[in-house]
Length: 337
Image 1: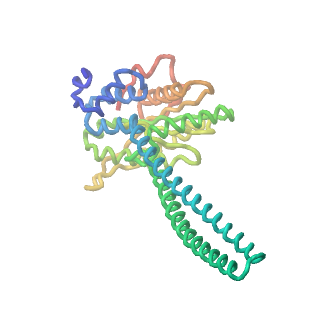
Image 2 (image 1 turned 90 degrees about the vertical axis):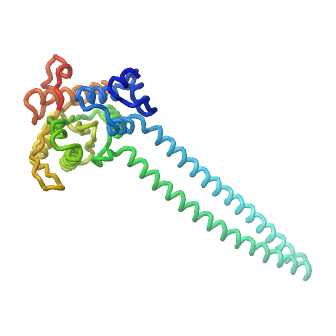
Image 3 (image 1 turned 180 degrees about the vertical axis):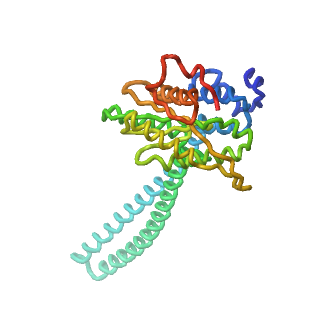
C-alpha cells in the first residue's frame, strides 16, 4: 500500500493484486517489468495497469472462459448420450415387434398375423419419428460443438496474441520458449534468443505522443515478422522490448539474422498517418544469446538481455552477442531508452 501511495496508484483490487505480487517478489518477470516502468519515470497510468494485468494475471479470466466452454461441451455430450440411449431403446422395441411378427407368420392364424403386422407398422412409425428427432438433435449438437471449437480457437489466439502488434505476447513467448528448450534438450539441437529494444523510445513518445508510439511498435513488429521465417517466433516481450525465439539456430546465424532485422528496421520511415509528416527513422539495439542445455531459461534471457544492453552502451543501433559480455554485470549499469 505504501508503494502504491508513493507512485500515485489508485488502491482498487486490480492494482492491489499487481503491487502485492510486485512487493512479494514471487514473480521475477513482473518485478522486472515494473522496475523498468519505475526507472523510466513515466508513472503508472491506466494503460500500464491494464497491460500488466493482461500480461501476468489474465489467465484467471481465461480459466473462467474455458470452464464455461467445458460446461457447455459437457451439456452437449449429455444430450447426445441421452438421445443415443433413447434410440437404442427404440431399436430394441422394434426388434421385439419384428420377432413377434416372425413368430406369428410361422404359427399364428390370420387374426394373430394381422395384430402382429399392426404392431410392426406402429413400431416402424415410432422408430421413423424417433430417428428423425435424433437426427435433428445430432445436427444441433454437432453445430454447437463446432461453434464451441471455433470459439475456443479464437479464445486461444487472443490469449496468446499481443493486441496492439498482432504478434505473440509475453505469455506465448514463455510457453514457446519452454517448449522449444525441451525440444532442444531432447534433440540436442541449438536454440538462440534475440532481445530487441527501440532506441530512445521514451523520447520519441514524449515528442510525438503515445499514438505515434503505438504506430512505431506496430511497424517494428511487422518488420521483424517479415524478416523471420519457418519456426522462428517473434514476440512482444513488454513495452518497447521485443524478442525472437530461434530454434535450430546457432549463435552466429542468430547474429546474422539480428543484423538483417536491425538494417530492415533502420530503413523504415515513420510517418504520421494523419498529417503525412515524416517523423524520421527508428533504430534498435539487439542482443543475441544461445541456450545451454540444462540451464534455467532465465539465464538465457538474462544473457540475451545483457547483450542488448551492451549494444546500447556501445552506441545503440547495433547488434551484440553474449560473447561480448564482460564479467561485469552490464545490467547493473544499463541505460534505458
